[in-house]
Length: 94
Image 1 (cartoon, rainbow, N blue to C red):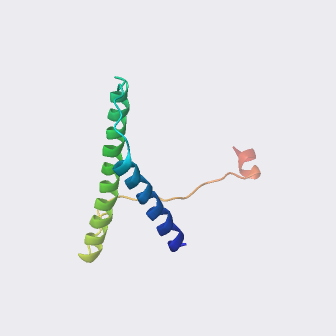
Image 2: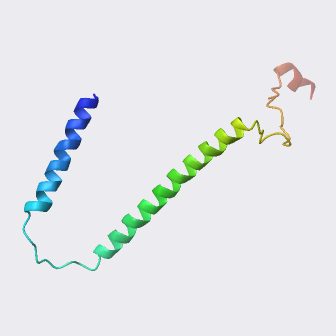
Image 3: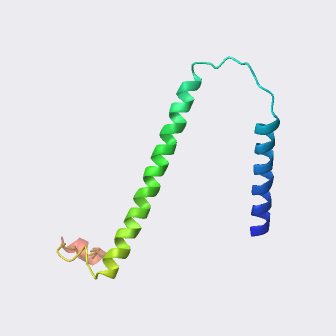
């Protein structure tokens, strides 16, 4: 499996490198709406990077808290998870 993924990566890298090295210069018009796509792509990258940083920050914080024996939930109140269900006889009494 790893060998197949590595092969695909090498082929993609070689293909993109060949396009960049041996491609012809194109004198083309860039549509102004392309800037909107670029802004969206940059915003997507920033949001994804922020989410990844947030995930790794939480993991690091949890690891540090476990190492230092710090309990985040020490002073929090916890409600019970009891679910009360009335039976038919109890409903008739009410």
